[in-house]
Image 1 (tube, rainbow over the protein chains, first blue to last red):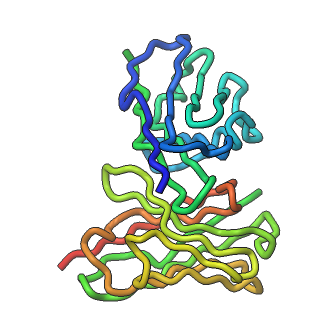
Image 2: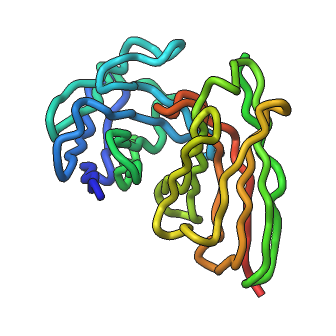
Length: 107
Length: 115
């Protein structure tokens, strides 16, 4: 199975700050990586697919990058509605594993 | 507008069975692979099953293999998850996901396994 190591687990940040969440796969996943946002009510929304493609309707302050085993999600300027949990996920091979999550909170 | 609506959850005793449903709308269901994903309370996300668009292939996580069965009825735009021999560790919110790349997600349905 491919293990996804996500960091940090908690990220305190200020509004307007640029933030980055990282994800490392235990072996290459050929850019087959999603990023999700989960709000406190449980709603899950895909933000980024195939490493860097922005889901329709997602603000352009979100971006993704990476290759091979290392990937990242960046929010260019943190807004209040961005405070949530974030997960990476590989879909290169079954089982389609997720990172453990990053809680983005106010500093 | 794409919608995935799960139903069928509830409180059941260990060893019992339950069948979840997920009704899809707003996209061509019969052309999409579909997934089930779960999240135990205060835990992360766990993929548990995939079914191809035409039911030709099905894949399961080891944690549910042999106990859970994924199926679909394209005439009803509905995805199913039949869960047998339920354990306390199956307690979770269950989400259906649309698309091989998990394009769409439902709101989830809660399954609680407790005596």
